Length: 360
Image 1 (cartoon, rainbow, N blue to C red):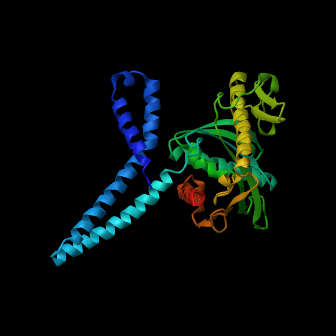
Image 2: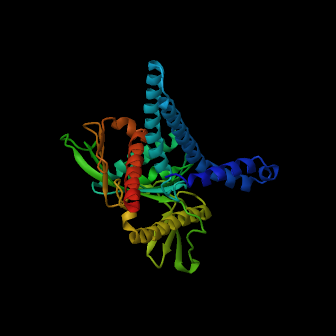
Image 3: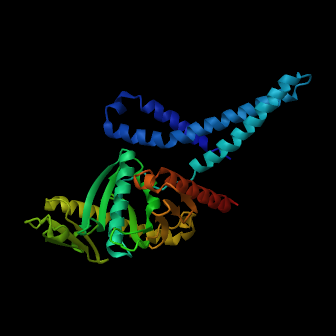
């Protein structure tokens, strides 16, 4: 079943030799590229070697049991080793199948996230701020960097919309499952009767893309400048440094007013525009192979309700996989790994099932 892994083993040994070559060490760009490849295939090679070791242990135990006149204690020991070897073969085989699944080419990219208040007015905007804080703290736990791109703040400190970039190793691979509608159930501070209100916020997760991946014709852009302003007219910038870019073929509009420099705002707005256009192109491709994206954790559609945060019960429920946790405070403080690990596992299981069906 795993015959082709020998190709990975051969390449792994080649890379080990190249990474010790003085000429490679002297070229940082080449070294970084080879290290990236080495890092990607190391888990496969290590798991394959673990699988082969379990197969060898099984063969040794079977050979021992076939011997005549074996002492009782030695036979029992060989039977235990055989049973353990079979368990190890089954486990490592399953883990190898997962490692050999096609990887999402965007997994190692930085991520652009956009949060918008939905139903619920000011309460939805305040919930958007809670989500931004949650993702910022999650990024901090992983040693990732968070950079604001654009903020539209309300007078009470909520966000009608906020966009930001999270940069770090594997950021997209973890955060891509956050796309969709997030629902909150809680008693607003302005509520005098103590009634629980339901509000929503929409999260969009986009991989950061390079110029090479998505070409934009400058003639397709209308670029306007304006004066940035904060909530209630605060933080008004006296120069027209804020940027609004309109992509004429699609009508898509991106604004950025976080920086005081017009050049920096334009650069950030272009990064967001490229990522949004890339997402549209990906959606077109995905539609052609729709089954590939119909996994258990959902389609990533922004209109799909994915999660509920219930404050009175201290409960978080992810509706895609039926996961319920009663540790809402920890999660809102950035302790998201348990939720994301469950989503990753469900996604892999669904893809593995599809892979088996396609081979059958």
